[in-house]
Length: 466
Image (cartoon, rainbow, N blue to C red; front, side, top):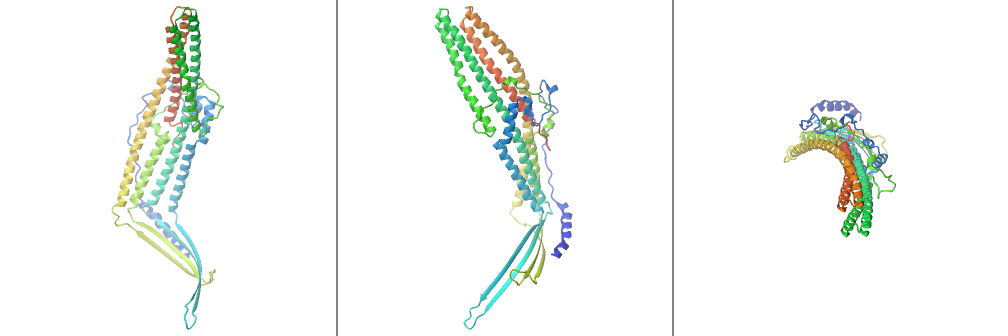
């Protein structure tokens, strides 16, 4: 073992001296000319605020904040991806073990007795032995194959971590949009019930006028049809509320949604103003783009490892041991020491290793195009989100004025009908206009809230590349 210690500095010096021969593969990046500014913009861009990691607080809803935090703590999807990160960490640890020598310890003790069984006499022999050995082997990573394999495993770990961040962002956005959908469905249901009450109130007026001969049976039938039609809209909305609640429960990691959600109106929620930043900043703000870039880094490492596998492999080994002729004892031992070096090179394999290099290069080109597509898609997503936010804000303001005028028209139509100055058709038309305009206003409010969430999501939700 003393001889092995003497050779150790020489082995280390040889390994470090040859490390400069490692095969290196450059990391490729897509060549995309990013625009200087967004084509779309928000009207309130001057007062927009930067995105924080807890962006959902900007809606001023304590209930939404509680739901999002519950989903982040209990979502099965996040726990699944978290386990994938752990698996990638363990894979990196396992791959990194190849940088260290392999040590083995062996020991045995043996007793044997043999009898020749000769007819003329007895020949008995007996032997005892004990031994203890230590062996070590180490592959000199001359061409950087092991280091490249570790780089690939490290890139895979980065990909899984970024995918976890992307899933967390997607999860929070899904919780927010589903919650807004639940509130909108409930608001539409409340409006439908209120409109049914309005239709039934008008029906009583028509029936009273019919009894006194001031209205026809056709008027009664028309208004009754309006009331029944409005009643028919309630059932589907009730189903929608239940199903949206169930969808939210799944996102939260619950079984059927627990009762106790405080009723909240869409109009009480604040629609935050989001600072879009510059298009070039998007590459550092979205975890899915960071995952695509990390995958390219891993592809370059895979190519380097495949190229290094074409070259000879060098390894060193050492062994030493003690042996004795005693059972369960190493008294008066004899010692052995052995050192060896080996070189292995594949002379002919039918092109298998070269095909592996070509395959990894093809994989790199595939990942490069995926990264390019992801960048282009992300730019479009931001442009669409900015455009939708600006358009729906204008539409909501106009729709709110339409609702006010529709309410006034219905009041006037009812008054003129009571006084006999107009027929029922004016009332029916005013009712339809009011009912549809109120429902449309709720949908636009939901769309604006969803647009804000989408804008947070496509801009990375406050995430920053490490």
